[in-house]
Image 1 (cartoon, rainbow, N blue to C red):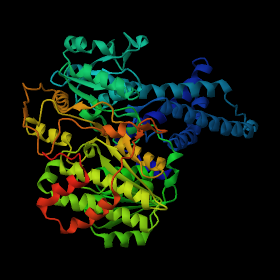
Image 2 (cartoon, one colour):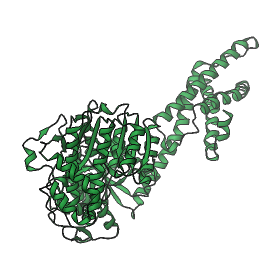
Image 3 (cartoon, helix red, strand yellow):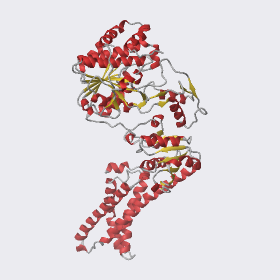
Image 4 (tube, rainbow, N blue to C red):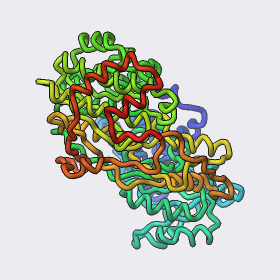
Length: 623
């Protein structure tokens, strides 16, 4: 308690003295009333005699209940309850001591105060101790509201959502002095909230009325505060808000609330990203399907990359005993290990091994050391134009790397081997896509000859925000003032978030029986030009007016649109137990030719690569 006394800061001393004066004054005033406004010398002497221990008793409980540790501008029900409880305990102790002294002092003619005096004193202490705090809080709220009305140079903000998150955002804005902007209106579809106020801000309309509200209240910025809204509804609301040309931001999603530790408005609110406009319904995970990972050792090749690292995060959720990150680039792998160790506190155990999938001996060293039960093969060269310029590197890394890893998995009795493939493997027009199609054939080949390992491939399209994807490029171009470059006005791509793709890959691993090519449901293809235009609008700018979009022409090996399955595969395409994962019909191919050609790779010349691919992938059409 002495430490708490010492910790009271100078700006709390006034409140501290005020409370002690209230405590003693309450007894004087209460007894004065019970004596019918009459005070004699003996009554005053009695109250002064007991003042020291009364002061100490209340002080002890005020400090124990930490009344002076609270920031009273955040005062709420909990703080008021603490005042009442502290006052009640102090009053009870005073009554007990007075009663004991009164009994002992009857021989001296001392009389005990009426019980009603204690009740009245308790009520007075609560009233004045709580009252001063409410008064200070109200004064600060009034000053804060005054600041909001005076903030003519700040942004005028519209809040979407009059629920808990909207209330929280308004509260944080008020305690920051509205230095980030001035909220002037709220919209919400709940008719019960219409014409009501949240922290003094009126609810003026519905979400569909946002354009009219923006015009009427001269809004500069809109903040979306409905974290529970479905992805489809969020996209609808974002599109309505974007049509106004205002700067658009959003509060954290429900799954982000635990992640955000910052306590100020600026760190909680972020700009709506183009990824938010492409968000899809949440993946429904079947934990029973993923039990094959529990207490097992899992190896992820390319584990430091954008897909591989998210795979490791998703795998860690299913409580494996160990995750081995195998990558040729050490920095990303090191960062990922630190993140996983910090989040999971060493369970699972995370190890890094540096090496290349091209090096069969290094792979054997890693397999010998860890004996993984499952392998996720994400290591690959994926950049289409770069692989057109360096085709032999694509062969060595993608085809030879996959063959080496699959061979080790078969030799060391791995139970599950999952290859990450791409939609560019379907009717490929580029080297990268053709090499990934060969990788699919390698997986099916090993599935036929392996006695214990279940080999499967998972085919999916572009992942949002991955290294080398179009969205980071657009953002960089926008930061530089434009123009944004799009290869063709009609080009489309399938998109999926990295977490969603990784979750489905892990699920597919549990569904594999051997030899399957799983295809993920990517939804509808998205026009790249729409991505560019939406990104510009989300920045509060107008496409082609504030920021231009230029068309540069298709790059080497690039198609206008991608396909997820070949026509020959569609006949046998079936839905799995997960409605976002399909399995295609396996197409026949020559196993002996595949083995023979792969053994030729080390001796190939760069100008022989496309002919080599054409031999193994007849539908490969080099551009």
